[in-house]
Image (cartoon, rainbow, N blue to C red; front, side, top):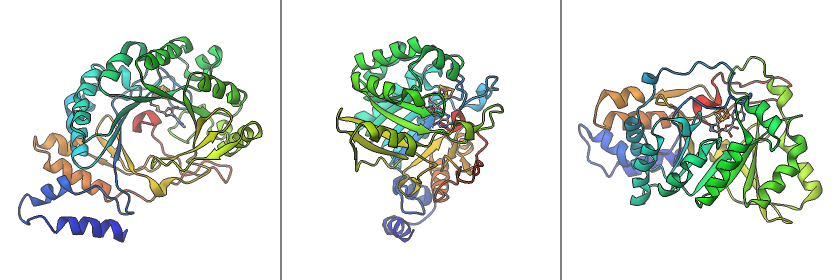
Length: 360
Ligand code: SAM
Ligand code: SF4
């Protein structure tokens, strides 16, 4: 904590004092939270809508936000550009399904100017893959080099069951389109007990054959989905990893992204396998990210309810000073970590919003 405060203080003392200077200070000082974590990664949900209804993410009958609640594409641009001016170097676009947002390419094209200027190091997205055939080439033109595609099963019937509305063939074709456009694809699979346990090796082989890394995600207690029981679905990644280790030599990789993923290399295939384990392990100490919803709420932690409304300061003035001050005030409230806990055979620390709201 002291390091962060003193870094900000040292920096701030080089600026002149006086009216308007608080926002000037806000504009260029690095974003460092109270636990000395620099905030360099922004995940942005551009819509709460989706063309799928994955059972662990959404209820079948969802009520979506009225359009006027959403940030416009111009507002999203202003919001992201302000974060970039404050030191954010990596932008991940998510949702809902980001590629169902109308005119989304306009936004990607606008963000590519920050890649060209060198301020932004990476522009990427997480998608269900359904619209990739349509957009992959254009996304690659905007400088998107790597994407994450969520895919929990390679079985048509199971895919239809877990996504309710999705078609596997369309997603596989989308993945092929992304690769044809030269993008690296990483597959994200939610580990679901009794659902894809039997596909552990099938999915891994398929990824290896197609030159893709694979990350497994523990199912998180997000949203009140009524008929779904998180504890029944929960498949601990420690178990999944032990099963992999029965067949492969796993080498722990030092690589850290500041996020919840830990990686191993399978020596026999050279493939990288990730584990996102917010529940069995705590990843919070190195957290470098914050999440912006499509309505302009900034969540400083995926697993906590606290958020800051950035839409009001954004809309209050065409100048970005108010927005910068609000961002800095929000980062000063970033908590040490989440409180998810399945350990006592009940889901505690649960947050009520859906993953599609915060952007997974
Ligand atoms: N629609 C896009 C997709 O599916 O990739 C982006 C948004 S989605 C909310 C982002 C990620 O969150 C997906 O990989 C999805 O599997 C994951 N996710 C959704 N609900 C989850 C939950 N309850 N627990 C763990 N992961 C979840
Ligand atoms: Fe849509 Fe992604 Fe949620 Fe599935 S996980 S319902 S694809 S937002």
